[in-house]
Image (tube, rainbow, N blue to C red; front, top):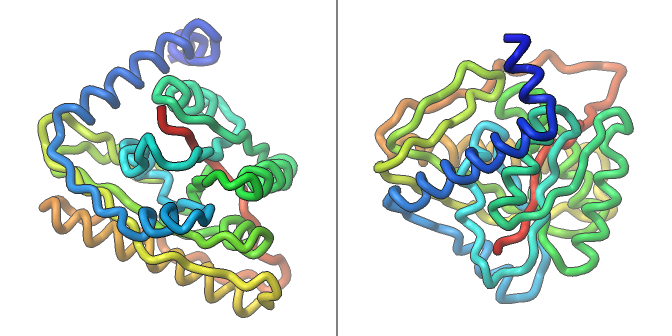
Amino acid sequence: MRLSKRILKSDMGQRLLSHLAAFYVRLVAWTTRWQIETGPVDRLVEEGEAAIGAFWHGRLLMSHLGWKAEQPRIHMMISRHRDGALIARTIGHLGFSTVDADSKTGGLNALRAMKRCLDAGDWVAITPDGPRGPRMRAKAGTIKLAQLTGAPVVPASVAMSRRRILNSWDRFQLALPFGRGIIRCGEPIRVPRDADADTLERARQALEDALNGLTGELDRRCGVPVVEPAPQAMPETDTPATDSPTAPAARSA
């Protein structure tokens, strides 16, 4: 265990593992029969509108296939920890760029960086339940970014008929080769710049519901058990909800 941790922490170990992970992702992509249903994204791209892609942390693997090479640049927010660094390297091998999210600053630097990306006409991608959960429960950061920039949020998910669900906090979906996969996007969620606290909460809940609805629908269509969200946390009375953004966004090669 200690040896494996040392290897994972080392620069050489991360380089090797990221190359292997990228090769595996390409293998699964090449051997899977895909249904790509990204009409809402295609319409926004056609209209020249930058947007925020959102998907659960557990569905990160293979989600990049919903983005076409000829579409605008997309940047993925990745948290600053050991696993995040490995994910960032892997994403880089697949032709995507990343924005570093430092949870120690509350994600403020990442939000500013992603605002700059959106202002430049690029897209960004976020896992609203990252980097530590609770699973499939949206934090406020994605909605705050939408309010700050005026960019719509596009919920998306991916499901595989051949997969392994890991016993991690996010119930990570490890895609397996030679199956069927579906990627689907929902309708954009827009947040007014002058939204009050109640409006922001309704938008956050709408995003969470849309993502869970998509994920459950795609799991059922693939004939696999539906992964359920973590139990609802008891509401806090004194402390406002905060977001520690994770992961995504990227650029197609």
